[in-house]
Image (cartoon, one colour):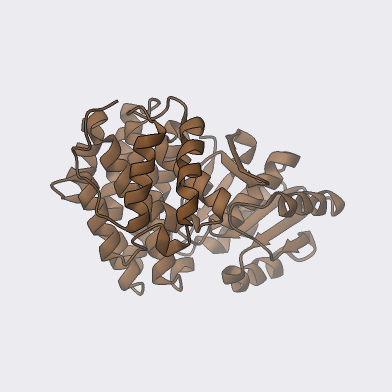
Length: 352
């Protein structure tokens, strides 16, 4: 991807300089509530180069919020956008960059990895997603110090979101030998470091390794793209307002089990890098180690929506999944995920 990456402890101090290198003279600053202190620091350094600040960010980027923020950028004559926060802050920045063509600099404070991709999403009546290089941040600044106060629950679910990028990239029709290598390394890093980053966040080296894994995961997803798993997450999250990272955490083992017979090399790589006998079960066990939500019911999915979700996903996924999909098989997958049953392992039945 045509993107500059600044990685390392203490890198946040370089954000103002990186914006200057982009030619920014009027910066729209978008920050999540949890990143307010860092946003205050950046605003101070920008001085009269700060065009406006946006404090409201919401998951799945509501269309009205995107429209209002685009209008603010234009009204204040912004010539660049900077975001500090998780995927919601990055997502709003992407919506502005997509609509205006302004360069975007992202400072992630979770492990979601969306800052490394040109994938955007905005939610009106339904969630719309797409790929456009205008949405790709021109610069990303990764600093593990910024993740010191990240709650364990957010560490776990955003890290599993990153892991999902790797798993889907491995079985994507657009995978390459390079994305396969990077995905395997990211799974190795995340499987080893994510539990320690979750439960012992004071260890900077573990946060740094987890952040590196998240960056690699986003990088491979940017090239290879996703399939059934990400389709389901966008359908459920955009339609029923489910937490994005938690939805990834719940669904990933089940989708891996569903695809296992159709993507044996991909799931073998996942199992090897997680040091598990079975990929789906290894992902399930990792999620339990992280105390991630165990079921769709636990994160607010209504039982009455499962039929609609299966029908929407079949239409949306197209032919990007290694195993063909149908409403009945997806309904069974969603039922298992809704009730928190363990995944079926690596033999979900004949592929197709």
